[in-house]
Image (cartoon, rainbow, N blue to C red):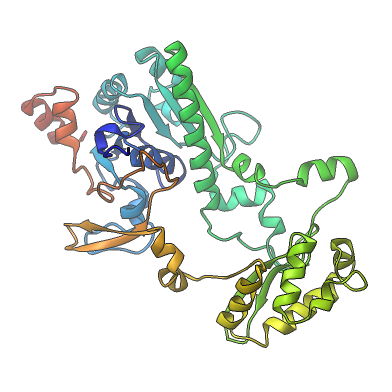
Length: 408
């Protein structure tokens, strides 16, 4: 029997998160926690707030679609941490918090009088996620870090692009931010489990370049053992399988991905092509032979793909079980039946805009306690007074004085 899921019985209900970070990485971690029930307080500077509010496509409200999507479920509380009074208010919030997410350069919180030692003393059970470009230690720790730089330093950007061509950005320029947010979320959940056992909090030191580097499969052991430096292979070259890449179809701008990781899968592709003899032992039936003749194999597949429309090609592949899929742009995604069947796109009302905004839905999917989107990104300072009054017990005159001094 499946129970009704409400905000009160989600996995992280009762956990309070303070998100004092900016843009994507650490805020993405806080966003995931909020989707599964945590109460997330987004602490922003009173003048302008998180720069993510200006990142992306502007809305008539003054912030952006990126902000609306990435700040989902959060409450905006404005505090000037450059001011002594602001630091004191922040410390009171720390007393009430379970998790703190920050991604300032090392030394910033310390400069404001908020080092880990002080925060831990205020709240011994506090869990603190610290995201930086290079981590809290090492010779690069004081360098500014961005996802694009992390892609470069972590080794993925070097592999992206055409052979001997200019290395390109691997997909989204913020991929490293999202990866680090996910790793940070894993760290927070493990730290919460440890706190259940011991009552003690801890901090998580997450570096953007490390998250990228962790996704480079056998790059490190292959170099250590054989001195092998993997180069850019382009869309159709792979060291492990062939054909394994992207191929243009008859239609301008319409591509497909094909991934024959095994001999059986290539046999299915050959059947879809109407050329089963290609999978014979005398031709390209063995992966080793295909890799040795990858140029010829890829040319055969490329010619076949170029003779069909994308839909025609995919229909043939699906009929034989050959591994193929479309290279979707966002318009393709909006028309894709799978995305609609899985509700990967959800419409959320934004009263301030007078319309709905479509955003990616919550993942991962939990069978009994799936995550929720209560609302999209809030207006700057929308919840300041309510949080200070209800959570910290400040009186109306105290709040008014903080407003007067522009602390909040």
